[in-house]
Image 1: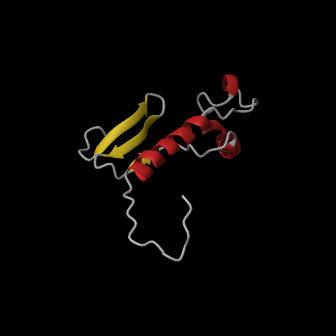
Image 2 (image 1 turned 90 degrees about the vertical axis):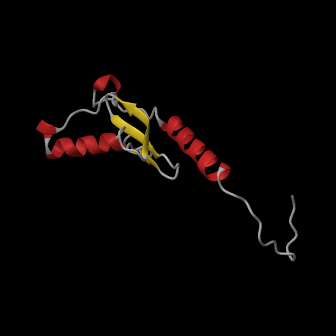
Length: 112
């Protein structure tokens, strides 16, 4: 990933690996995680997988309190995911989008 000439690694951890990658031309941002997950989505997937293959299903790291699947997980990433999306939207959409008014309807009264 780091050697690819068109990509920039933005976020990585030893536990999870690559998380956010950006194209060097700033046109693409790729996220490998699931920031959209609710607090129990991974729990639902874990219990589904345990039912299918208990011997090969590991407990998600740092997900259940005290790594105990009987305790309800907490969504500690919600604020961070909202902030990441907000910052992306603000910078790469609002700040980089040219606003050119080529047409204004003269029959509409605009209140500014």
